[in-house]
Structure formats: structure tokens, C-alpha cells
Image (cartoon, rainbow over all chains, first blue to last red):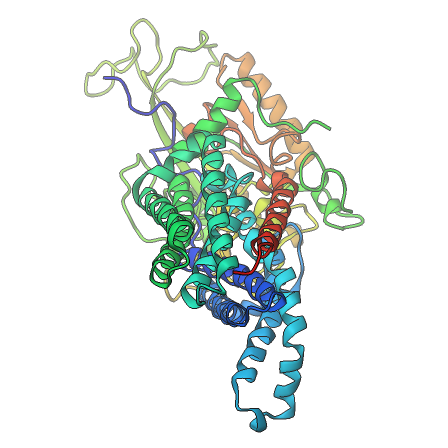
Amino acid sequence: MVPEATFTSYSGLPVVKASPWKADIPAYMFFGGMAAGSSLLAAGGDLTGRPALRRAGRFTALIGLSATMATLVHDLGRPGRFLNMLRTAKLTSPMSVGTWILSTYGPIAGVAAAAELVDMLPERRVPALFRLVSAVGRPAGFVAALTAPPVAAYTAVLLSDTATPSWHEAYRELPFVFVGSAAAAAGGVGMLAVPPDQAGPARRMAVGGAVLELVAEQRMESSMGITAEPLHQGKAGRWMRASKALTITGALGSLLGGRSRPVAAVSGAALVAGSVCTRFGIFEAGQQSARDPKYTVVPQRERLDRGEPTRYRG
Amino acid sequence: MIGKTSLFGPVNPARDAGYDDPPARKGFFTDTSICIGCKACEVACKEWNEVPDNGFDMLGMSYDNTGSLNANSWRHVAFVEQPARPTAPPVDLGMPTLLHDGVADDGQQTTVAGEDRPDFRWLMSSDVCKHCTHAACLDVCPTGSLFRTEFGTVVVQDDICNGCGYCVPACPYGVIERRERPEAAKNVGIAQKCTLCYDRLGAGMTPACAQACPTQSIQFGDVDELRERAKQRVEALQAGGVTDARLYGADPEDGVGGAGAFFLLLDEPEVYGLPPDPVVTTRDLPHMYQRAVVAAGALLLGAVLSFLERRS
């Protein structure tokens, strides 16, 4: 009988360890991306006189932001020590860099959303502090938009900077998949929450994001070698197939029927769901690749057999 | 302190971490050719470091019921049962033999026909944290809990780690892990691994595993000297006909800048559960950041473009 495996392992056990992360982390990545894209839409809505887009964007950013904080803290082995993240700043740790990116973006986006709330209060009952918040709402919204893109992009580095085969090998294209996914999600929320006459930019961002995500994902898979396999297998495969179907459906719906409120709402929801599926799919693919020694051993063994062991060359 | 080889390449890790005049780098040379699989290292490590049990499972993997390095196993003896492979003609070392005429007590033929050698070989190897020159776990730790000691080793500070778990997937060897059990154990929720007995080192003592090893399969000392000793040992074995003997992790120009704990193996690394060509993930980090910056720029540009159409 021909042996099925073409590589050797120790009793079939994994070589690297899968991350201890649970659903918190892909959820965190989705919420962060949605918040970032929404801050961009909000600032644009503010600049171009689309108040409904601005308001929806700022509130969505606040919701996303709160969810990222909740998932991030919940995921820790010692949630009470969350603040230890802030005792140092380390460029070699994407998680440290990300914490500081979020710590910059978060309060500013929070102020922009708070200003939106204050402006909804009845005029004469507003205390002085609230009036201050309202006054800085506009600049805060713009600064939030400028600090938002790193929030959407860094999570790709967070996953790739590991020995998890399907995350590391994806590092060239994963940031583009993730910002595309973020734009699709934020655009989708915009289409859901904003009347179509003000939602034009949300539709365009949604479609652009969906196209970027789909194209980057294809390129990513072709550059990953065998570590692309888990993207098509098991749980990860199901997430990725759902992601593709939802993202394509949502993008087509936005393109063809985005000016109709019901079509826009359904398409927007599909894009949001597609973004969730992308994050869970990529996350699961990595976990699966770490649990199977094949994806660690085979690429390394192939390097050695080609006579190209990893070596420092000045 | 931050130099060209801070992320990849040969470097003195303690000096690179900012120690002005560090003591000699300390490490292990584990010579698996003389490991007898007694697991004294596992026991001594647990005793000294108060490492809790990892459950009491029978794994059905030869004599290995530890399974892997993990939060509760900082030394792990691997047992590999193999059919013997043809090698160069053995040199008679004048050692007493286990078998007589190739016939065991039960009368079964247990040697390869025509050769006074068993048809079976048993590899044993005590694995441990590699204390990499470029340690991915340390690089990615967001709190600074993982740090480089003056001895060039890598240690977790229990009171700082917040259990983010990033070091776990970062390690190319699958060594470090967040402790999840037993529930009442200390440091649950926190990343755990070999400290190369930092406390003993500070007192001028030998790490517990090396101290307990009855065959000197685990040798502790200055990394420079251990590398020299390992080279001589592998040459002696090769000359003696053990052509499978090779060093693993002893090369300062390899993917992790050389390991502080390295090995003499008798087969390919993956046979022992070790990655054949490990690379510190942070070697590629500058490139990753570059790609992410371009992607972030694309998102910003895309957002601007989304608004660049006439109002509907």
C-alpha cells in the first residue's frame, strides 16, 4: 500500500501550536474593520453635506469600537491585566502597535460619536461640557478618519507575524483582503442605515471593498503554496465559501439595485455578513494549518531538499 | 543596540537586548545519541519549577505519555520506534551486546540477517525550549513580559503577562503555551515555558534537568563551548559509522540565529517532532508592515474616491 503522507512527523502530532484564541479574535477583526471604514464614511459625509451618512458612520464606529474593546479584553487569559498592554510600546509586536493604534483612534472616534449624541439632545438643556464635545465633534471626526485605516490594516500583520503556516504565508496579500473586507462591511452598514440618496459613497465603498477583497484573496491563495489548502477545507472552507457567495451577492445587489431601499438593505446585510465570514474563515484556516504538521513540515522540507535552507546572508 | 541583525542573523542576544557587559551566553547541548529515555529531566524540571501535571493520559505513543512541550511540560522526552535502516558497516566499539546470536529470550529472530544488529531502533530525545537568538515569542509579546536575560535566555515574567496568547502561535517550535489547567494551579491563563532555570543560573547552579540527567545527554554550559563540544561529538560519531548523526540548531546563521539549546539528532528533525527549517516570523515583519501601510493607504484613497462623484 502506498502511504498517504509524503512527510514524516512525530506520531502525526502538530509541530507548531495553534493560537489559544477563540471567536473573540475574528470578531475583533471584523468590528475593528467595520469601525474604521465607518469613520471614513462619516468624515466624508460630514465634508460633503450628507448628515445621515455622517451620523450613521460615527455611531457604527462607536459600536464597532466598543465591541473590539470587549472582545480584546475578553480574549485575555488575565483580563484584569489588560492595561499591561500599555506599559510598553514595541514595534516588533504587532499587538503592541495595534493597541497603540486603537488607543489613538478609539477616544477620538468616541468623541465624534459623543458629539453626534449631544447634537440630538434638545437645545436648551445642554451643559457646558456637552457643548464642548459638540464643538470638537467635527475635527475629531476628521482625525478619526485619518487614524482609521491602520486599525483596519494592522490586524493582517497581527495574524501573519506568527509561525501559523496559513497566516504567515498570506502576509503579502492579507492586508489588502482585510482592508477590502473592512470597506465592504462599513459600506454595507451605510447602505443599511442611510437613505439611498445619501448613501452613494457607501455603495461605492462597499463595491470597491468587495472587489479588492475578492481579487486580493485570489492572489493570496496562489502565493501561499500548500498552505492555501486549509482555506478550502473543513470549517474554514465553509466560512470562505459563504464569504465569497455573500460578498459577490452583496456587491452585485449594490451595483444593480443600490438605489432601492430594500435592495440596498439586503445587499448591505450580505456584505456585512460576508466580512464576518472572511474573518472567521481566515482565522480558522490558520488554526487548522497549525494543527496539521503537514503545513509546517512540507514547505520547510521542500526548502531543504531544494538545497535552500534558510540562512542569513549579510 | 538596534542593529542590522536585530531581527535576523547572528548576534549576541544579550548585548542586542541592551546589556553592556553580559556574562557568557548559557544554553543546553542535548546529545540524543546517549539519551536513555529515563525522563529524569522531566521530573527534575517539574519538581524544581513547580510545574503542575498535564493530566495523566496514556497516549499510546511508545513510552511517551507527555506528548509535547507545553505549558505544563518544559522538558519532553520523545520516543521513536523505527525499523533499523542500513548504515555504514558498524565499528566494533568493544561494548557489551544485548543480544546473543541475534536471538532474544523468546527465540524470535530479532536481528537483520547476516548482521549482528537489531532490526529495530529506538530514538529518544529530550526536547526543551530553544532559547532562540531571535525569539519570536519575545518579539511579539505586547507587554514586555517575555524578556531576554543577561545569560541570553528567554524568560516569562509571571506577574506581567496578561495572557494575550500571542507568543503561542509565534513560536516556530510550538514550545510556549498558555496554562489552562489544572484549574487551581498557579499562573493559569499565563504563558509558560522553560526558563533555563533562571533562578538557579543566578546562583551559579546548573539547571535542574541537566543536573538530573544520568548520562550527560543534557549538557549545560557556555553556548560557545557547547557548540565546539557538539561539533567534536558529531565528528566522532560520523567517524564511528553513525552517519545519521547531525546537529540541529547549532548554526548561528540559521533561521532563528542559532538556538541557545541545540541538539545532536540521529534522524531528520521532523521525526522527533521538530521543524526541519524553522524561521523566526519577525524576519519578515518589516515587509509585513510595508504591505499593511500600502493597504491602509489604499483604504484611505478608496474612501476619498467613493466621494469623488457628483451628488446624487
